[in-house]
Image (cartoon, rainbow, N blue to C red; front, side, top):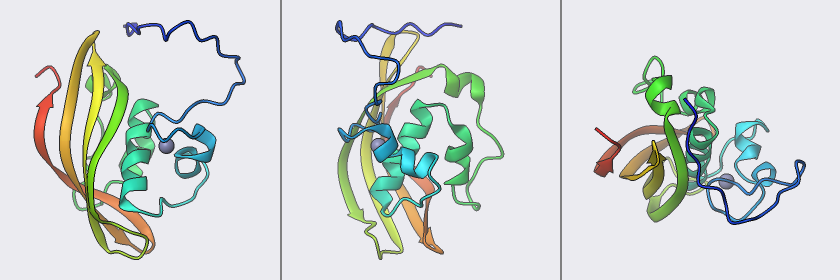
Length: 150
Ligand SMILES: [Zn+2]
C-alpha cells in the first residue's frame, strides 16, 4: 500500500541534502536523533530518548524502538502492518518531569501527530523512562488520548 503523502510546499530538495530531524528539533537528522539511531550513542536524557524513539517510528526503524524498550515491558515484536501504516508528521513535547543526565527516571508528556490513510490522527501520552547502566529505556505510558483509527 502506498501511503498518501501531501507534497511539501514546492520545496525542492537535493538528494544529498541533509534531512531535518523528524523529531522537530530543527537540527539535521545526522546531528540529532541519528546519533542515537545509527551512531551508537546513548540518548543522554529521557526527552532525547523520547524524541529518538519518535524519529525511529517515523523512519520505521523498529529495531531501535525495541532496543530502547525496557526488557520488563518490551513486546516480543511490533505489528509492522499497523505500525507501518502510520505516517508520523510532528512531535510536540508538552512537559518533562525529571529525566535529566544524572536522573534514574523521568516522564515526558507529548502529542505525536500522524496520518493514517490520509486521515489526521494523534497520540497524547505521558511516557515513563528509566535509566540503567547509562542507557535510558522506555518503560510504559499513560495514554491521555489516542485517535489512531481504532
Ligand atoms: Zn531528532
